[in-house]
Amino acid sequence: MKIQNDFRKFFRIVGILALAVLAPLGRGLAAEKEKVILDTDMVELLDDGVAMMMLAQAPNIQLEGVTIVFGNTWVETGTAAAIRQLEGMGRKDIPVFMGVNEPTRKDRFAHMAEEKRLYGQNFDSHKGAAGYPRPASWQQVYRERYHREPELQPRKEAAADFIVRTIRKNPGEVTLVAIGSGANLAAALDRDPSIAGKVKRVVYMAGAFMVEGNVMPHGEFNVWIDPESARKVYRAPWTEQVFLPLDVCNTAKLSRQEYQVLTGKITQPWARAMWKDYWAGPLFQQDPGFSSYVWDVLAAAVVIDPQVITREETLPVDVNDQVGPGYGDTMAYRGFGPEGTQKARIVFAVDQDRLWPMVEKVFDRL
Image (cartoon, rainbow, N blue to C red; front, side, top):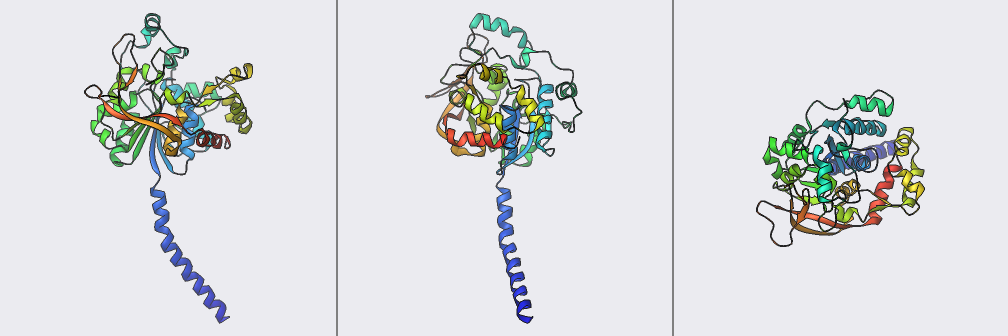
């Protein structure tokens, strides 16, 4: 009996010592989580929704909040989609903030058709928020789209205020993942220009530097929809800027085979309902050779795993905000950029073998 008691005492002491040694290590591992704010013109699942889920599920990421900006959608539509997907994921702890809901140029949407007539357009006819009427409220969108009452509510604080507050509170620790128009970040800079030097980095899905555009001959949608805010944001002296432009997004194609793999993984009714309405679904069914893209997913991927990047170049970048044939074009300079431009890391290639398992892991939980 005495021997047993001695053994118990010995192992109790060993356990206490182990906890004393491992506890600081555990705290250190927790502290290594990267604080992230996702600034997005949210859509369901691919691509913004999956980008959000990747960040929310990544063990090395602390998703501090999701800020909604106009772009692909009106803020009301994006807010409803973000909230429904967070509910479905069981992540009611991640707050949602509503942001800027109009471009800098007040008559921007009214002149888009004339702009395309005069200056040409590319293969993508996507108009985003400019293509449908602004909803009365996010609650209306939610109820009409999901036929239920929301469990979550967006926070009352404006998106730009949340961005400023979070960066001030965590200097040098916050990564901004910006995958919509630049309006929320421009508004945050208007409130406090000093935040540019207090972030860890800004990672964008935006631009088309050495390739053609998608909605315009040289213009990429996220920039083209509000060139003035994009120019203001890209010229701010951020600690670091990383771009995932069409130059690399065009290389990460969603094939029909991968589409079918992802389809087969979905089991939850809410996710199945969303996937049923995925815009490219009918195109995959009609044409075995059709492929789509995962754009915003790349921005989330490089934040979670920087080794996804296989080729990049650091160059000064700028945006043309003068109305004309090049309105909304992004430019990179291998020489010296114009006065006021900032350097940025432009990603030109990613490791597909590292990328797709990250996407599939999200669908494994749907």
